[in-house]
Length: 280
Image (cartoon, rainbow, N blue to C red):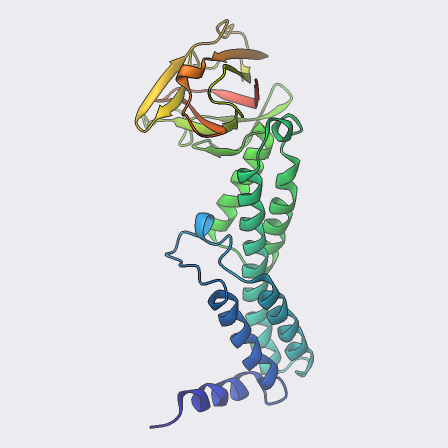
Protein backbone atom coordinates (compact mmCIF):
# COMPACT_ATOMS: atom_id res chain seq x y z
CA UNK A 1 0.00 0.00 0.00
CA UNK A 2 1.33 3.42 -0.94
CA UNK A 3 2.04 6.04 1.71
CA UNK A 4 -0.97 8.45 1.90
CA UNK A 5 1.35 11.43 2.37
CA UNK A 6 3.29 10.46 -0.77
CA UNK A 7 0.04 10.33 -2.71
CA UNK A 8 -0.95 13.77 -1.39
CA UNK A 9 2.47 15.22 -2.22
CA UNK A 10 2.28 13.83 -5.77
CA UNK A 11 -1.19 15.32 -6.22
CA UNK A 12 -0.03 18.75 -4.98
CA UNK A 13 2.99 18.72 -7.32
CA UNK A 14 0.89 17.85 -10.37
CA UNK A 15 -1.94 20.25 -9.50
CA UNK A 16 0.11 23.33 -8.61
CA UNK A 17 3.60 22.69 -10.00
CA UNK A 18 6.75 21.47 -8.30
CA UNK A 19 8.01 24.99 -7.59
CA UNK A 20 4.89 25.85 -5.56
CA UNK A 21 4.45 22.39 -4.02
CA UNK A 22 6.45 22.92 -0.79
CA UNK A 23 4.54 26.09 0.12
CA UNK A 24 1.17 24.57 -0.84
CA UNK A 25 1.85 21.52 1.31
CA UNK A 26 2.77 23.73 4.26
CA UNK A 27 -0.28 25.91 3.56
CA UNK A 28 -2.68 22.98 3.96
CA UNK A 29 -0.84 21.89 7.10
CA UNK A 30 -1.15 25.39 8.58
CA UNK A 31 -4.91 25.49 7.90
CA UNK A 32 -5.34 22.15 9.66
CA UNK A 33 -3.14 23.25 12.55
CA UNK A 34 -5.17 26.46 12.96
CA UNK A 35 -8.10 24.31 14.10
CA UNK A 36 -6.11 21.70 15.99
CA UNK A 37 -4.43 24.37 18.11
CA UNK A 38 -7.69 25.71 19.55
CA UNK A 39 -9.27 22.29 20.11
CA UNK A 40 -12.72 23.84 19.79
CA UNK A 41 -15.49 21.57 18.43
CA UNK A 42 -17.55 22.53 15.39
CA UNK A 43 -20.91 21.23 14.20
CA UNK A 44 -21.81 23.42 11.22
CA UNK A 45 -23.16 26.47 13.07
CA UNK A 46 -20.76 29.17 11.87
CA UNK A 47 -22.31 32.25 13.50
CA UNK A 48 -21.87 30.88 17.01
CA UNK A 49 -19.06 28.36 16.56
CA UNK A 50 -16.53 29.97 14.21
CA UNK A 51 -15.46 32.67 16.70
CA UNK A 52 -12.55 31.10 18.57
CA UNK A 53 -12.38 28.06 16.29
CA UNK A 54 -9.22 29.09 14.41
CA UNK A 55 -5.78 30.10 15.63
CA UNK A 56 -5.20 33.47 13.97
CA UNK A 57 -1.39 33.14 13.79
CA UNK A 58 -1.68 29.90 11.81
CA UNK A 59 -4.26 31.43 9.47
CA UNK A 60 -1.93 34.38 8.84
CA UNK A 61 0.91 31.95 8.16
CA UNK A 62 -1.28 30.01 5.73
CA UNK A 63 -2.20 33.23 3.94
CA UNK A 64 1.47 34.19 3.50
CA UNK A 65 2.42 30.70 2.29
CA UNK A 66 -0.33 30.75 -0.32
CA UNK A 67 0.82 34.13 -1.63
CA UNK A 68 4.38 32.85 -1.92
CA UNK A 69 3.21 29.70 -3.71
CA UNK A 70 1.15 31.72 -6.17
CA UNK A 71 4.09 33.98 -6.97
CA UNK A 72 6.20 30.93 -7.90
CA UNK A 73 3.78 29.84 -10.63
CA UNK A 74 3.88 31.01 -14.24
CA UNK A 75 1.45 33.68 -15.42
CA UNK A 76 -1.29 32.10 -17.53
CA UNK A 77 -0.40 28.53 -16.56
CA UNK A 78 -2.99 25.94 -15.47
CA UNK A 79 -1.13 25.62 -12.17
CA UNK A 80 -1.56 29.32 -11.41
CA UNK A 81 -5.24 29.21 -12.39
CA UNK A 82 -5.85 26.30 -10.01
CA UNK A 83 -3.93 27.94 -7.20
CA UNK A 84 -5.81 31.21 -7.76
CA UNK A 85 -9.06 29.36 -7.12
CA UNK A 86 -7.60 27.93 -3.91
CA UNK A 87 -6.57 31.42 -2.85
CA UNK A 88 -10.00 32.92 -3.61
CA UNK A 89 -11.69 30.23 -1.52
CA UNK A 90 -9.20 30.65 1.32
CA UNK A 91 -9.44 34.46 1.36
CA UNK A 92 -13.23 34.22 1.39
CA UNK A 93 -13.00 31.98 4.44
CA UNK A 94 -10.27 34.10 6.05
CA UNK A 95 -12.34 37.30 5.79
CA UNK A 96 -15.58 35.59 6.82
CA UNK A 97 -13.85 34.25 9.93
CA UNK A 98 -12.85 37.83 10.74
CA UNK A 99 -16.40 39.00 10.04
CA UNK A 100 -17.94 36.40 12.35
CA UNK A 101 -15.38 37.03 15.10
CA UNK A 102 -15.88 40.81 15.01
CA UNK A 103 -19.66 40.43 14.93
CA UNK A 104 -19.55 38.15 17.98
CA UNK A 105 -17.34 40.65 19.82
CA UNK A 106 -19.74 43.46 18.98
CA UNK A 107 -22.73 41.51 20.26
CA UNK A 108 -20.97 40.35 23.43
CA UNK A 109 -19.81 43.85 24.38
CA UNK A 110 -22.82 45.79 23.10
CA UNK A 111 -23.58 48.70 25.47
CA UNK A 112 -26.07 51.55 25.61
CA UNK A 113 -23.26 53.87 24.50
CA UNK A 114 -22.65 51.64 21.46
CA UNK A 115 -26.23 51.71 20.30
CA UNK A 116 -26.58 55.43 20.94
CA UNK A 117 -23.62 55.85 18.57
CA UNK A 118 -25.19 53.57 15.95
CA UNK A 119 -23.17 50.44 16.76
CA UNK A 120 -19.75 51.65 15.47
CA UNK A 121 -18.23 48.35 16.64
CA UNK A 122 -19.99 46.61 13.74
CA UNK A 123 -17.92 48.51 11.17
CA UNK A 124 -14.98 46.03 11.13
CA UNK A 125 -17.34 43.04 10.86
CA UNK A 126 -19.24 44.53 7.93
CA UNK A 127 -16.00 45.58 6.20
CA UNK A 128 -14.49 42.09 6.52
CA UNK A 129 -17.68 40.45 5.30
CA UNK A 130 -17.93 42.78 2.32
CA UNK A 131 -14.32 41.97 1.38
CA UNK A 132 -15.05 38.24 1.71
CA UNK A 133 -17.81 38.50 -0.89
CA UNK A 134 -15.33 39.90 -3.43
CA UNK A 135 -13.50 36.55 -3.34
CA UNK A 136 -16.50 34.23 -3.28
CA UNK A 137 -20.01 34.15 -1.84
CA UNK A 138 -22.77 32.01 -0.47
CA UNK A 139 -26.39 32.91 0.15
CA UNK A 140 -25.88 32.40 3.88
CA UNK A 141 -22.89 34.74 4.05
CA UNK A 142 -24.64 37.42 1.99
CA UNK A 143 -27.69 37.24 4.23
CA UNK A 144 -25.59 37.43 7.39
CA UNK A 145 -23.76 40.55 6.21
CA UNK A 146 -27.08 42.15 5.28
CA UNK A 147 -28.31 41.37 8.81
CA UNK A 148 -25.24 43.08 10.25
CA UNK A 149 -26.17 46.16 8.25
CA UNK A 150 -29.72 45.97 9.62
CA UNK A 151 -28.39 45.63 13.16
CA UNK A 152 -26.24 48.71 12.64
CA UNK A 153 -29.15 50.62 11.10
CA UNK A 154 -31.43 49.96 14.06
CA UNK A 155 -28.64 50.33 16.63
CA UNK A 156 -29.20 47.00 18.41
CA UNK A 157 -27.07 44.07 19.59
CA UNK A 158 -28.98 41.49 17.49
CA UNK A 159 -31.85 41.65 14.99
CA UNK A 160 -33.86 38.85 13.34
CA UNK A 161 -37.06 38.52 11.36
CA UNK A 162 -36.97 41.77 9.39
CA UNK A 163 -37.53 42.24 5.68
CA UNK A 164 -35.11 43.96 3.31
CA UNK A 165 -33.99 47.50 4.07
CA UNK A 166 -36.52 50.05 2.79
CA UNK A 167 -36.73 53.83 2.46
CA UNK A 168 -39.72 55.65 3.91
CA UNK A 169 -40.18 59.36 4.57
CA UNK A 170 -36.54 60.05 3.74
CA UNK A 171 -35.15 57.46 6.19
CA UNK A 172 -33.87 53.95 5.84
CA UNK A 173 -35.96 51.49 7.83
CA UNK A 174 -36.91 47.86 8.34
CA UNK A 175 -40.27 46.11 8.33
CA UNK A 176 -41.06 43.45 10.93
CA UNK A 177 -42.81 41.32 8.30
CA UNK A 178 -39.89 39.47 6.73
CA UNK A 179 -41.98 37.62 4.15
CA UNK A 180 -44.13 40.52 2.96
CA UNK A 181 -47.69 41.84 3.06
CA UNK A 182 -50.64 39.62 2.28
CA UNK A 183 -49.15 36.16 2.68
CA UNK A 184 -50.65 35.49 6.12
CA UNK A 185 -47.31 34.29 7.49
CA UNK A 186 -46.28 35.33 10.99
CA UNK A 187 -44.19 38.52 10.73
CA UNK A 188 -42.54 38.38 14.17
CA UNK A 189 -39.29 40.32 14.60
CA UNK A 190 -36.92 40.34 17.57
CA UNK A 191 -34.07 42.56 18.70
CA UNK A 192 -31.56 42.25 21.52
CA UNK A 193 -30.97 45.53 23.32
CA UNK A 194 -28.60 46.48 26.18
CA UNK A 195 -30.12 47.17 29.59
CA UNK A 196 -27.22 46.89 32.05
CA UNK A 197 -29.22 46.32 35.22
CA UNK A 198 -32.17 43.93 34.77
CA UNK A 199 -33.20 44.60 38.36
CA UNK A 200 -34.01 48.25 37.66
CA UNK A 201 -36.56 49.87 35.34
CA UNK A 202 -35.49 50.76 31.82
CA UNK A 203 -36.81 52.57 28.77
CA UNK A 204 -37.09 51.46 25.15
CA UNK A 205 -37.43 54.15 22.47
CA UNK A 206 -38.41 53.28 18.90
CA UNK A 207 -38.57 55.50 15.81
CA UNK A 208 -41.70 54.11 14.12
CA UNK A 209 -43.64 54.98 10.96
CA UNK A 210 -46.97 56.42 12.07
CA UNK A 211 -49.19 53.99 10.12
CA UNK A 212 -47.51 50.91 11.59
CA UNK A 213 -49.59 48.14 13.19
CA UNK A 214 -47.82 48.56 16.50
CA UNK A 215 -49.69 48.72 19.80
CA UNK A 216 -47.16 46.95 22.06
CA UNK A 217 -43.86 45.11 22.24
CA UNK A 218 -43.07 41.99 24.25
CA UNK A 219 -40.09 41.38 26.53
CA UNK A 220 -38.79 37.81 26.78
CA UNK A 221 -38.98 37.58 30.57
CA UNK A 222 -38.01 33.91 30.79
CA UNK A 223 -38.05 30.97 28.41
CA UNK A 224 -41.43 31.00 26.68
CA UNK A 225 -42.77 33.84 28.85
CA UNK A 226 -43.18 37.17 27.05
CA UNK A 227 -44.40 40.26 28.89
CA UNK A 228 -46.46 42.74 26.88
CA UNK A 229 -45.39 46.40 27.19
CA UNK A 230 -47.42 49.31 25.81
CA UNK A 231 -46.03 52.74 24.79
CA UNK A 232 -46.75 55.97 26.64
CA UNK A 233 -48.79 57.00 23.59
CA UNK A 234 -49.96 55.06 20.52
CA UNK A 235 -48.89 55.58 16.92
CA UNK A 236 -50.79 58.45 15.31
CA UNK A 237 -51.98 56.70 12.15
CA UNK A 238 -50.34 59.49 10.12
CA UNK A 239 -47.70 58.76 7.46
CA UNK A 240 -44.76 60.25 9.36
CA UNK A 241 -41.87 59.22 11.56
CA UNK A 242 -42.57 59.43 15.29
CA UNK A 243 -40.94 58.34 18.51
CA UNK A 244 -42.62 55.81 20.79
CA UNK A 245 -41.44 55.31 24.35
CA UNK A 246 -41.94 52.01 26.19
CA UNK A 247 -41.28 52.03 29.95
CA UNK A 248 -39.94 48.56 30.82
CA UNK A 249 -40.40 47.57 34.46
CA UNK A 250 -37.73 45.47 36.11
CA UNK A 251 -40.29 42.71 36.67
CA UNK A 252 -40.59 42.22 32.89
CA UNK A 253 -36.88 41.63 32.30
CA UNK A 254 -34.92 38.40 32.10
CA UNK A 255 -32.72 38.22 35.17
CA UNK A 256 -28.96 37.78 35.22
CA UNK A 257 -28.34 39.23 31.74
CA UNK A 258 -27.36 42.65 30.47
CA UNK A 259 -29.22 42.39 27.16
CA UNK A 260 -32.98 41.93 26.79
CA UNK A 261 -34.82 40.33 23.87
CA UNK A 262 -37.74 42.37 22.55
CA UNK A 263 -40.29 41.02 20.06
CA UNK A 264 -43.03 42.72 18.06
CA UNK A 265 -45.28 42.15 15.08
CA UNK A 266 -47.05 38.90 14.37
CA UNK A 267 -49.63 37.67 11.86
CA UNK A 268 -49.44 39.91 8.76
CA UNK A 269 -48.85 43.19 10.60
CA UNK A 270 -46.69 45.86 9.00
CA UNK A 271 -44.33 47.71 11.36
CA UNK A 272 -41.63 50.02 10.03
CA UNK A 273 -38.79 50.90 12.40
CA UNK A 274 -35.86 53.27 11.77
CA UNK A 275 -34.03 53.08 15.11
CA UNK A 276 -34.23 51.48 18.55
CA UNK A 277 -32.55 52.81 21.68
CA UNK A 278 -32.53 51.95 25.38
CA UNK A 279 -31.86 53.96 28.51
CA UNK A 280 -31.70 53.27 32.22
